[in-house]
Length: 280
Image (cartoon, rainbow, N blue to C red):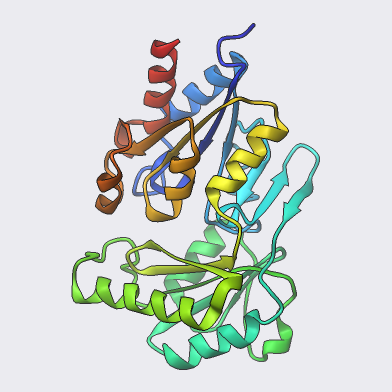
C-alpha cells in the first residue's frame, strides 16, 4: 500500500497554496506531485467561483474534484462535470438588493456557474478577473443575472480587502455589516467575514468543512488533512483529522490553536507533506 493511500489533502488556495502575491511556490507543486504519486488524493477548497477557478487551477496537479464557493459546489475536472452544487435560495436577489441599497460604500458581486455579475465599477477587480480569464459583466438590470447564484460577496472598494486591521474601525464596520446581513438573511443563509474587508454569503448548511468531509467519504479516504489561513477555512480545519494553519495567515485564526505549518511564501503545502510523512 502506498504511504499516503489513506489521505485526502484539501488546501485553501489564496495565501495557502499561493503566497500573498498570488505565486505558487515550486516546492508546493513538487510536494503535491510526490504526495499523489505516493497514493494521496489532493484538491483545493476555495472561496473562488467555478469560472474563476477553471483556468487558474488548470496547471495544478489535482487528482480529486475541486470544491468551490466555500464548499457550496464541487466540480470534477477530469470528467468536466459538476458533482454537486448548492445555490442560494430563490429570495437571494431581494437580499442582494437590500445590501446594495443599505451599503452603497461597498462593492457587490454575484458568483454564478457561468460568470461573475458585478454591480459597481472597479478597474482593479476587472483587471484581476481578466488576468484569470474569468468572464464577467456589469449588471444593468437584475433580470440579467443567470440563475442559479452560488454565492455573493460584499467587499471594500479601496483595494484593501486583505490588509484592513480587523480591530480597526474599518474592520469592525465589516463585522457589523456581516451581522446586519445575517439578520436580514435569516436561517437560509451562511454569512462569513472571510477576509477583514470581504463578506461572503452562501446557502445555509454548506461550508468548506462539510464539503471536504463529504468528498473524503466519497473517495473512501479515512484521513482528512486540511490547510487554511482565514476565517472561511475555520470549518474545514475544525472538521479535519489533521488540520494545519498557515503561520502567516489571518491572526484571528491563532486563537484556535491549530497545528501550524510553514508560512505561505516558504511552501506551506510542502511543509505539510513533510510533516505527514514524518508522522507515518
